[in-house]
Length: 302
Image (cartoon, rainbow, N blue to C red; front, side, top):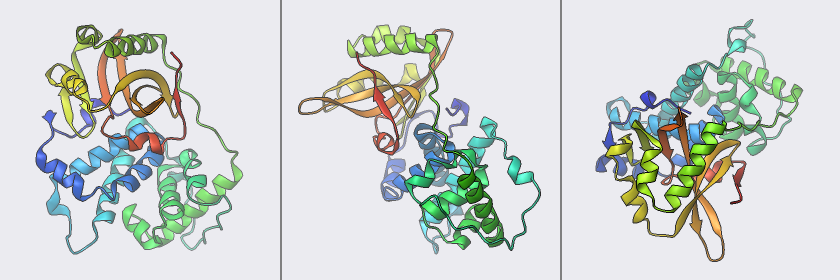
């Protein structure tokens, strides 16, 4: 999960102009999220990175050359944010500082297939190799486009692809391990679900620290106490309830939407808990595409 001080949005509700900007790039958003999710290894971390990247692009329009396509510019910002995220998390890119592979090396023929068959295997690769494989074998970028995006040369991209594909063909498939929630986190999440479903807002407040932070993706970033959080849920236009579960192995609370005859996961919420108090809530209710991009959505039975 991204630290709260990494998020670049201002404290409080987002500006109307920012929503207008998001609307202009809405067709590019799924690809940006897919790339960042596979680079970070998490559909939720990927969404956090995308939001940082888009807000950076919104704040720095002067850096965009309007004579060129918008997509490569946004992808480069998102890529750089992914690299920052991985460095912050302590990912060691040992292969990047290993003996240099000659730039004339021709990339090996991919034998793992492309698309979704590849994008779930790349987490064992160093960031540059991971990026090159995703951009080439999943998003079908040209070598020249990839070189510009990852700040390399065509020869460097070919070498990175060769190393990455060799590693992927020689390494056994490793399933993502489930991150077990601590007893403390489980207890707080269970109480959060029970009280939220009862609309016991005072009880929910008792679970949060005095300085708890709230990030409602694409809507609000700031102190939990300053947000119209409960009011917005009370006026949500369709029936909902919360439930515990796992999203790609990570413990989350799901927002369930009532369908014709069943409850269906709509979005996810995750928490930072310290000392039996919630320090940070990240609510993705406005980002239902996260669940569509996940490989595993498990709702716990009540």
